[in-house]
Image 1 (cartoon, helix red, strand yellow):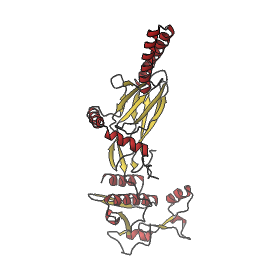
Image 2: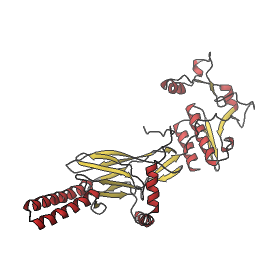
Image 3: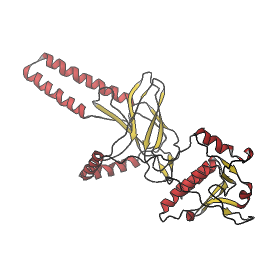
Image 4: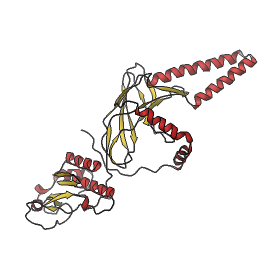
Length: 353
């Protein structure tokens, strides 16, 4: 069964002071703006695809800091061997240089030939990290070691790498997380894959622009506020106000002596599984008079985003209680219903409104 998105338990920790300092120093670099404009121009010309096979045309290689230091060391060894006519110096210099060349070939071959496939991302709540699941597969008869994936960030942004080894003629799964800046429908960000195996003297990398999109639900208000009162039905038999939370749509808190047939057993199974005894019973008379409608006007908050967050909390609370509820938004009206599909439809409407 597909996994369902869960509301955020806590917000991500703020950026550390060293991270903010690096970002500030990068912003002061005059080359940062030029590099960002070049990257934007170059990225736009890369095709969008949820499957990418790496070849020599889209894999790049450059020495790392350790690689440049090794090159400088080899140059010094070569000059010293020539100056002092040291045969063992020549042997050591060319042995290290040959090892570096072989390492460069192995490093490039480690990334070249693998296939990256992005699985459709599940919706997430704002304030939590959206998880991107990537399948890395290889048809080579030997294992590929030390392959990392991360969300591409320019300037002073830090990459959060997820590393894996790909077995021979097999595949492995990598989970990469990113934090969407706001609710709504977002394109999956550009990803980068790289390796420095085996010596760390060369960096081989590629850029990948997936075509998939991820839906970000609004963050529900915490703690969740009480549900609004129910509205009289169009052909209602009365206009008496509801008696409490959950009593407007044929459901009320369990009372001692209620017949077992009136207990909402779907809700009971969920609460017993969590170790609580939050039982509810059906109230047929109240169900004939009132129905639950969630409307931004009932949120009574000045900030539009705060109203959306409260509506999201109400949707989750009504779904948890097993109530029939409807949603009214500007230009959208979702009739009262219940179930996972109805909850997803309401959250999608809140994310896109």
